[in-house]
Image 1 (cartoon, rainbow, N blue to C red):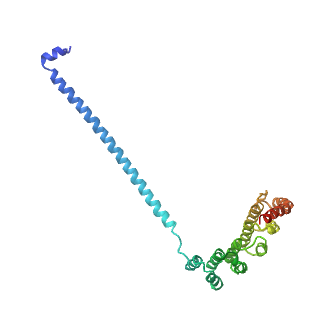
Image 2 (cartoon, rainbow, N blue to C red):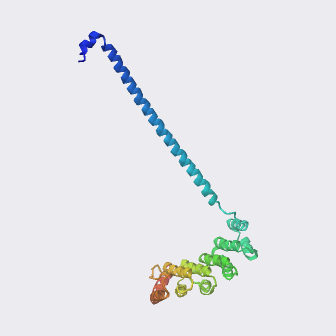
Image 3 (tube, rainbow, N blue to C red):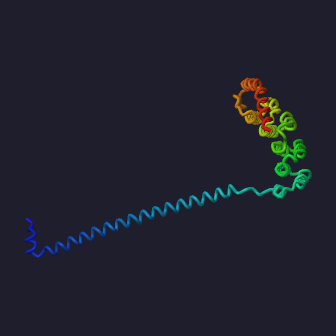
Length: 252
């Protein structure tokens, strides 16, 4: 049987036990603090490793994508045209168009001239519609949306109906839609039967843009299904075209 506190006091053990309890308490507190510090150190170590890993991944991603996305060397001729456009040098652009043999640079110059001169560039742009290089004709067809009058869609309609390159015909269809050249509506409807899917897509998009109404026509449908939709469009086209044309004229 253990002695009670009075017995312990008589034996002189109370101070000893008190010191022992204090020492145990200090040891326990010290151990808890050490474990906390070790835990924090471990957490910090893992956080540091994770941050380093993320930085490494980010560096690799940036290095890879920065190499892939570097712009190609600029064509010095295109740069020359850009300077002429910035200076609004219409005469210089015309000379460039008439004398240069680089198709891409000339195409850029045609569009630049349209931006600089607006409708005054119409003769040069119309001439470019007949250029032997498809790139130049595409640029000219696109530029017609800037320089042409909606009431005079003839040059673009000729391109849409007769050009040998689908991309050029498609560019003409886009320009007619952008101009809202109502007199070209029949030519656009005819283009819905073009042998090229992209031309058909551009033609229906131009019709939708011009008439502000959507028809149940898909350029990728089978020919028989397309013909049914085209017949419906032909049926309502004259009325819609005439109403919109009259409303447009009334605004002037």
